[in-house]
Amino acid sequence: MQVAFDRLHDAAERQPYPSLDWRCTRLRALQQVLVAYRERLADAVAADYGSRSRDETYIADILPVVNAIKDTVKHLPRWVKPSRRPVQRMFRPAAAKVVYQPLGVVGIIVPWNYPIQLALSPLVGALAAGNRALLKLSEHTPRTNGVLEQLLREVFSDDEVAVIHGGVPVAEAFTRLPFDHLVFTGSTSVGRKVMAAAAENLTPVTLELGGKSPAIVDHDAPMGSTAEHIIFGKTLNAGQTCIAPDYVLCREERVDELLAAMRKAAKRMYRRIDKNPDYTAIINDRHYRRLRSMLDEARERGAELIALHPDEEGLVPQRKLPLHLVLDSPNDTRVMQEEIFGPILPIVPVSDLDAALREVRKRPRPLALYYFGLDNQVQERVLQESHAGGVCINNTLFHIAQDSLPFGGIGDSGMGHYHGREGFMSLSKQKGVYIQRRPNPSRLVYPPYGRLIHKL
Ligand code: NAD
Image (cartoon, rainbow, N blue to C red; front, side, top):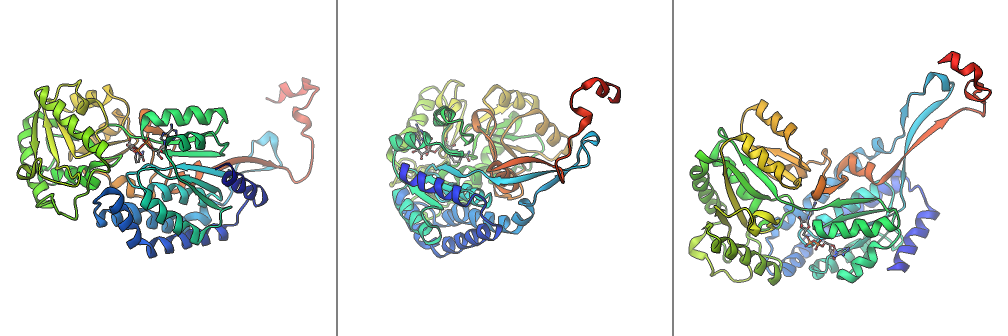
């Protein structure tokens, strides 16, 4: 690992400012191999999961990276341009500008849930900003990692991009390397450890973490499409999505209507769960048992569980867990306290929007917030009176697919941003520069100061 890091570091020292052309050529080549490898990647992710919808791999793992590359290549010539700034009158004649300089070597730590997107999207930002990168892939996706490494080798030399495999001890050693920036995507608890380790080197971090993202269903939400959007957001990748709606805050007088609409939407999207190529499995036995035990605990504590495919309850092999709605689960149960990260959706009745916003504010700041309701002023109020990494109004998930928007958490759901221009900025040094044509001491502000005071 140290050898791989040193190689990247030395290359960054030798070529500290890769040209715009170098960056765009590499990005376009990455796009090409990604498309060429799409079948192999879909096979590998499916093998890692036991069963992963191929379409979900295309839509949610490969396409976002392809779109990010296209958007970056289009806008990069503008992003890299120095930004001219005005100069205070007393310091003239002179000019000022901000230049965007590559940082050097960026470390990228990747989780298992979107193993392609969450490795390559940060890489796109790192390369766009002119950096080298070392990736630590997830120990839970060995087959995908193998294909990813192969495709990266087709585009990059090992002094441009390198890959490390391994579990927790490797990951811990990785975070101790003196990176110029570290992008970590994973759980909040591990994020804390990453930040602590990075602090030893004063390495800046971008932390893309998780949490409980609420969906608020207001009195005027059109229920059929609202239910469909929430079910889609919750069942994509079987709920193993950092921005999946984690729980629903629904106006109490509309809960029955919501349940009926969700039943309908779930049946429309997935006629069956078993042998359905569109429905993804839970990544491994540990997570499957974790989700089952969350359901058991909620049931034992008096919650009502509603399986949306009741005829298949308990029958589905291959760790496929049908979507369960959970009603009346006490607030101290795990489904109400922990990030669920699977196809389980608690529904919490609320008297009005104030009560919903109070509920959101009581909890750590979430990665996403979804609001369903038609009144523009109320939508504005929700934006102003709640904190979240990102928001969709009348939909779920789609904010992450907008390359024009920054993506990142707040509080327990993370810090810093990537995607688009903000991603480029995060991984560049924004260096302020003051330029005089020639040395020309500004006698006005040098001692003796006596005269200065009269000029202010
Ligand atoms: P995880 O935190 O267990 O692991 C993520 C990565 O960190 C893995 O590569 C792992 O090897 C590494 N790691 C483990 N221990 C480490 C340590 N002590 N120091 C440094 N690295 C360590 O997360 P996971 O189970 O792979 O992924 C699920 C979590 O990721 C969920 O909480 C989810 O919300 C979050 N997530 C967030 C985003 C986002 O964009 N904000 C996206 C996807 C997933």
